[in-house]
Image (cartoon, rainbow, N blue to C red; front, side, top):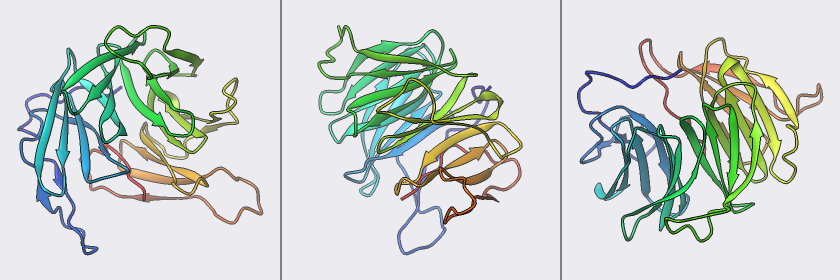
Length: 260
């Protein structure tokens, strides 16, 4: 299970520059004061959300290098995502899911798990917020009308084989990665059971999962810095074959995979 970093210097969040180079690019101003737990780019602009163990979610205009807001939480924030360019959602170690209103700075309660909430995604196909937790469940929420006193927002709860570490959504595909190297693939239109139940091909604990934008599969990242490129079609006649690669040097920590 992940643990909070201790005794580390302030975290630096760098955005890669254009032109196809592999340099770190510019360093964002006013980074978190503790470890970064997740990074999310907006699908609609240059905005960037950063969640951290320092109990904050920070909003940046990444291109202009301008901080746009800081959202304080009662405990470390383990995940975040955009709804649109006016709001987002956070997953916290205090077991809560919250909606973040960028223009007003509001931080509204959406729902609660029975243990720390490790990850959160918004599904544009279903209009639902999907969260994963160390309580071994994923939950689907209807965020409409959230105003700080929301009721009846829980759409469904789905048990998982182990603690949920990461999940990803693309179209109606939902991929859930848990402790024990379990991977479950769902169709969001029929959540009664997983369409596929797999084991990660990577040797060590899964850190993150990201669906391919084209809907053909997903990438799994492990704590050792390796990434496995997986596909939904596992037949012998499938046009794509899975493979794995090492992305990070020794003693590096993989936080997220971003595919575009």
